[in-house]
Length: 381
Image 1 (cartoon, rainbow, N blue to C red):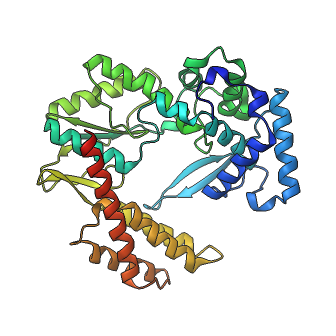
Image 2 (cartoon, helix red, strand yellow):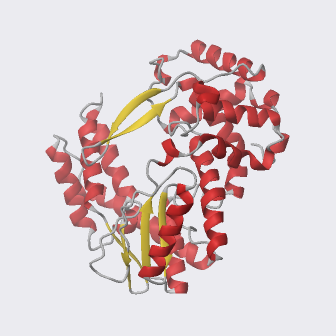
């Protein structure tokens, strides 16, 4: 862990022990897809793993390291469409993960939105609405954010505070430009563990700060990577801020999707979806419903489970994980019907899930975690 990136040295970073720690962390987190070489974590024996990591450390120290080409993978979305992921090889992902582990504490200190999860974002939004009575929620997303981010400005934004740390800047450039090197002008490969922090640096310095200076505030304080929720006093203010956001992005060759789903949080008919929920404001607090797109994602998960070796356990894992992710919406009133729908969805794909009581307990615990987080943020405000 490097609290001051200016003190970074390749000789301290590129060691077998450090890369092995990144290997183990990445392996446990998932991401089992193979790169262009067709290899996954499971394909390496212990000896082969050690040899590959030592070779990577040697090439980094000699500054001959260059990532392999990327493999394009099509990942199904809940609505039947696909999104493309550009996958690095296992070793290249490990190198990027090792650098992220080294710089993660510094990144979190410098970029205020980085590392904040969906629930905390909503808890902070709830406090803002309560204190400022800003009930108009303007929402849009950045179109094809990762592929359209200009590569050089993204690297410059990330490295601005340590641009004279030659070792570190060199390694960041290798990871972000990848196999294409200087030929890569646009895009940051989303499959790289380092990519979210680099994109966050670019958006913070070139969008958040610029818009904040223009409007003497922090309109994008609740931005979640490429999701842009703005709490405003009125429809006109929300539209004006989204328009200004789009103009700033256009300067960098980027754009908004234009799928504005803005609305009044106090309106019972509001149906806009933000970060997997439809939010409402009632009785002095944020309330949530689960949109149909979330159930489509659940069905897609059960469909993929049928392709797994241990499909039944995978389906159970998906069901519990889905309920855990939707804790803010799982009140006592709606939890039984949500659990019944999860069980029904699973049965359509041939799975018999555990007793409804077990799933309900998962949902109940998730709801309690949300309430604890919301109360904690309220006390800090």
